[in-house]
Length: 275
Ligand SMILES: Nc1ncnc2c1ncn2[C@@H]1O[C@H](COP(=O)(O)OP(=O)(O)OP(=O)(O)O)[C@@H](O)[C@H]1O
Ligand SMILES: Cc1ncc(CO)c(N)n1
Image (tube, rainbow, N blue to C red; front, side, top):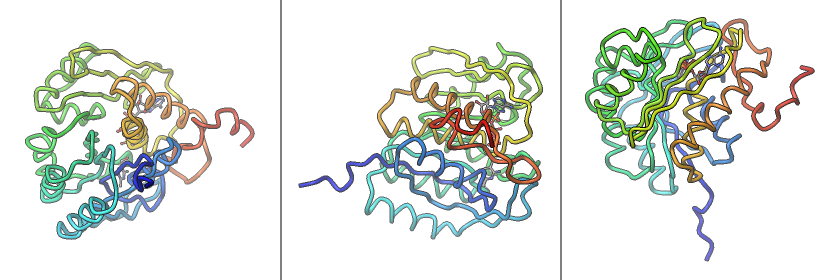
């Protein structure tokens, strides 16, 4: 008999972006391009575009748990990630559900503030991630301000990024990727610390563009996709970096502000040169 769940399936647990460039929308577009079937637990709905977040509302914890149960009843999720979680109550309900079900390796993207400056997670929510949810994480992927918030101090240098990664690992995450997209240095540097103690950096030339909406969602979703396909953590992270780099470099002209990435680009590099 055919196994109804033989096709690789991944899950994003996050907020929607009506503008299509970040959150669940960026996650599902990325997973689609990476060749996995994507599913979603909606934690919050934002009214958002490339200019900013105009409003958001979190979904009731009951309905969030019902979404988890629906997925568990019918799918075989091979890897999952979280994005925008809104507040402490919602971090807690996600924690409870991730403890309850086996959805494979868990990538925690500790989304705190959108590119336009809006706060997408309350201070209590940040504490709940730091004290609880992070302990379930196979990989955590903070950007620089998020990493600083998690460790409670400034990161001043590249060696400081590795020290910070170690402190974040000590909070309970198995593997740590600190993303270096923020700032204006000519080179963008991400730092990785793996479960076995191996560390490495991923460097690329900064693309001078304001069209960087959803970079973090995109790299974490590409990593989750590769984990769902069976990659080891290091290969999945290296793939994620290549995927997001192509998506940033091959700009598409959409929206008036922090425009979305080109999620087709990795699979079609060169095809967008004339657009
Ligand atoms: N301008 C850029 N040029 C090249 N690479 C970039 C640029 N901005 C971000 N990146 C890369 O994109 C990935 C995501 O990094 P970033 O620090 O932007 O995450 P983020 O702040 O979580 O994103 P967001 O909150 O918008 O989703 C990293 O691999 C980073 O190196
Ligand atoms: C819903 C949502 N999730 C994440 C981000 C961060 O990219 C955003 N701007 N909006």
